[in-house]
Image (cartoon, rainbow over all chains, first blue to last red; front, side, top):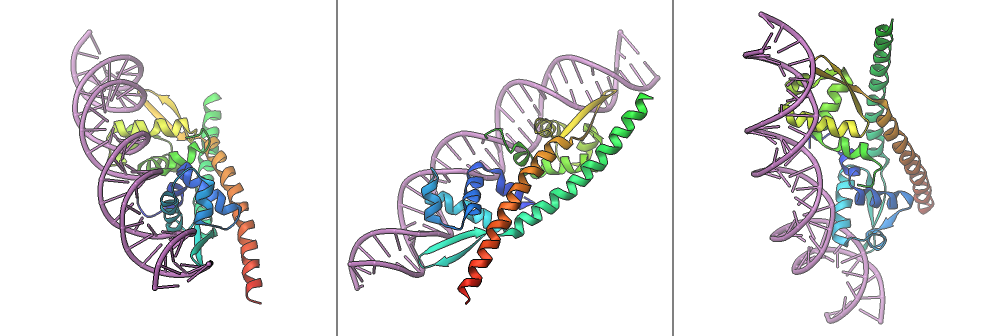
Length: 105
Length: 105
DNA sequence: GCTAATGATTAGTTATGACTTATGATTATG
DNA sequence: CATAATCATAAGTCATAACTAATCATTAGC
């Protein structure tokens, strides 16, 4: 992994997407998330670590618990990257269509 | 993999992202892409297959070559998905901030 | 037609990453 | 203070997917 675009790889795994979706719905503790999923607490913690490093979630301690909530930072960065791809794609597609039309003359 | 979100998994791999970025920059042949990357032509073809199946690229034959260009379809689907995540995230973050402010009273 | 180039596919190897079990560190509760 | 609960991390297993080497089919250019 290069360092960039960690967010995409973070959201590529289905279980991790489920973890993220739960946290996106409302802030939750690790135990909470674990109860909602068919994997161990250890797996959940490992997924949360990846999401944290991608700045997709943040945690704050509350007693013995750790409450996770969404961090807009990573999602924003991912969106920005995708937006630039998107405009590239539109530009390329436009010139492609134009070229095809010329072929049809 | 469920069937959805093929695009995200497709773009999760760094090499495949590089292939996609090259194609996004301008339409290219497989040989072109291979020359630009430190992997074999076989690997490039395999990556292109995944990108094709995710509808992120399309190819059209030109002589013995195969010219790949971007397919806006998959990128659009991915963007739509991310947009919904984005609004969820903003909503949750907003209520989180509001809750924190109440804590500060 | 023969040779070179392009690219897809197959088979096999290797690396990666998702998972469990086990453990330790911290905090809450009786 | 002892026990239970919460969570993170380490070590090890297993499945997957990224890769190379090899081959085949198609097209280009003498």
